Image: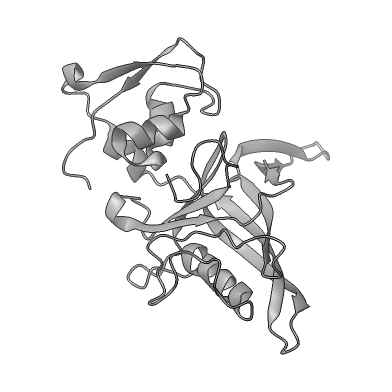
Length: 251
């Protein structure tokens, strides 16, 4: 659990970042905790349609050929006016010399710019080896969304006498991303005696179970598919989940 986010305090939305799609522990870049939880977010679902016209029929026929990746849109506020203590936590920052925690004694001028750069380092800057943007997991309560950053607009709205920004609004769009390696790495049916069983208790989530059992919350998607769950947001108390061992040699 991150410092300052102990039991009983406000749960902050956070973004966990991985350098590669395999999302192995060694690929972890860190976790970005938003300063203020969003007031709302938009989740977009769309069908992929094809339009055909049969011979002798002038009407177009639309047929679904699958679904588009889901998209989520959030607005994040960064503020250095002093109305709230900076609460953005970044572990293992990619930028050399970047602060692991921004707070208290940090100078106001340039703090918002630093926070924006931390967000971009965690979500936007491509892996220099693969030239691909980081793989992200958005976590907030029951929400857990594996994705990549599609775009972000940064609006600076308040400035100090020297012209340095004191407030910024980040309008970020994230696109669903399902790395196939997550599914293949968790399956190993050759030793059924090693498969663990867990009775769902009140408050259990797949995200938390994956973190506890595999030390990697990203496995919650694979657990849902392994247990043939239609939804991983809500678990039925008293039901039984199968927790298979990780397949060795694929990390």
